[in-house]
Length: 205
Image (cartoon, rainbow, N blue to C red; front, side, top):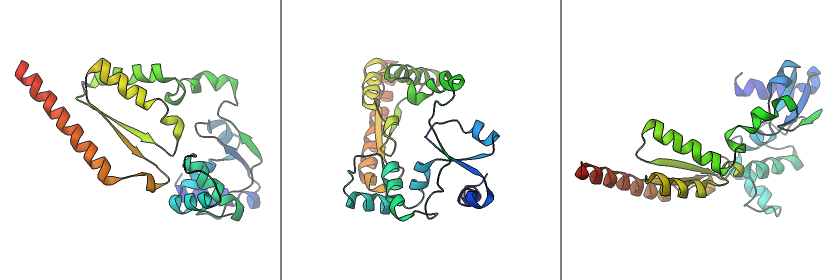
């Protein structure tokens, strides 16, 4: 379903008699859709097109810029029914990501929930499978759980695999956290390290 028709359906829920569920990131939407309940991810609403403006508003209210930018953006919408669609519909229910025990095991195995040791093993397995010359990692400040442990993973990969890595830091909501010049410098240095590694291997062979 295209994005805008979905949001129109969401906003019109009260008039159409549809039930609305606010759901956390990673939560399963399939049971809700099967029950004709409209799933709403508040964080996605807050991130739509107005991230910087909304983050600045909430920071002016005293909230720290270190908080999740999805949360900052959506909290900023709440007092004024603001944001790109004029606020969210009131929920008929709140759903957390492990609300069905039968789905708990499956969702405990997604990358976000497996722990640093298992993340490290998966990344190194992919490095072996695809015979990579280096690894680019993205630290997403807008969703901090996805960035937990990345510095440790980067260090472990360097120590065990002896291949170069680079960390690119950005924010999918608040573009103030992204420095293009800084990232370009890191990428240039990363490419030079990979080239040097290939030259060394070539001289050995």
